[in-house]
Length: 396
Ligand SMILES: NC(=O)c1ccc[n+]([C@@H]2O[C@H](COP(=O)([O-])OP(=O)(O)OC[C@H]3O[C@@H](n4cnc5c(N)ncnc54)[C@H](O)[C@@H]3O)[C@@H](O)[C@H]2O)c1
Image 1: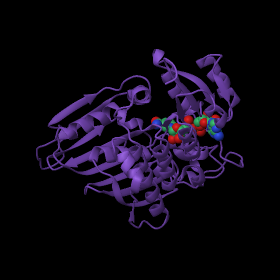
Image 2: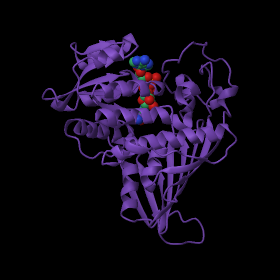
Image 3: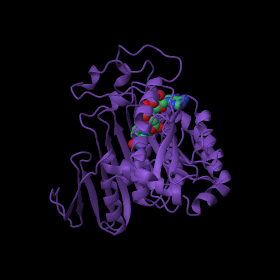
């Protein structure tokens, strides 16, 4: 570190990047945002107001990498992650990279190879591992609350799907691969974490079942459409959605089955037009099952059943109430940035893992391939050779 505080740059300092940068900047004397890069001039003007007149602002990420920095947050759209992460690592910077790590498995492996070669620190933004309800489930599993885990079933109700994923670059597979990667990367990572293994076989099925048929689209643009956000709860039913991206070739309804290397079987299903927006996790072990009810603002109830009954028994054997924290994603965002700053300054163990992030991309990519190729079961490639060894050595 070159000064008393960590000097942090942000690439993609509008949407997600602005939020994360704000958390870092407010973290006291330990870290400061000193440079911001974005294509949008309004975003850069906002950055100056928020982070001070002396913050360097630029439209060029290579110019930002030339600033005197210790670390960089990369929160640009997914199709830019690989190029920008490799370049930042080659500059020797500690990198916070948003999920999904990259659009492809070779893309992830190039990032891992760059980190291994330069020995620069790489941290992946899988903030769900810092969500209170996920951490509680992990702690319960670790202490044997349901015995040995055998199955995990995840249902993902993406109620804001039409607002967030079908209006801009997310809707085109050339920029996002598909939503079994873009959106599910979070949950695949959590499934791997809760179940203690990585997926080695996967099969997917899905369709563009609703949004593809809607008219009055946005006018065609040549490259990726910049992020379009905003959600109004009275925009209902989903068939009334207008102003979607001119091209939509990703699925809005999809499911995947996974077999992990430790024999655990998992399923994940995603629908982008449900009336509500939440995630439901069921984990079954040799001594019972657990399930979460609700998440987000209202908190989560986790129920654990360990005794048999002849039908559905609403009352569980144990019930845990988990309150969300402040600051975004149930408190996960302040926690993950806290861990990142600590890791950048002092190193040590981390809750998220570059190797695991790569495994979540590999699983999402192969599931998407299966889904688009008839639903066959496909194998998921492992990380190979010296890269695996480098990250297995306490860094993965
Ligand atoms: N971990 C989470 O909970 C979470 C939540 C939201 C988004 N994300 C991830 O964060 C990333 C960004 O998502 P977003 O919704 O903020 O996207 P976005 O489309 O809003 O883009 C983010 C910013 O990047 C800027 N940008 C685009 N191209 C650029 C370029 N070539 N150079 C510099 N800046 C550029 C945009 O102007 C915008 O301000 C994605 O990878 C997404 O998956 C993660």
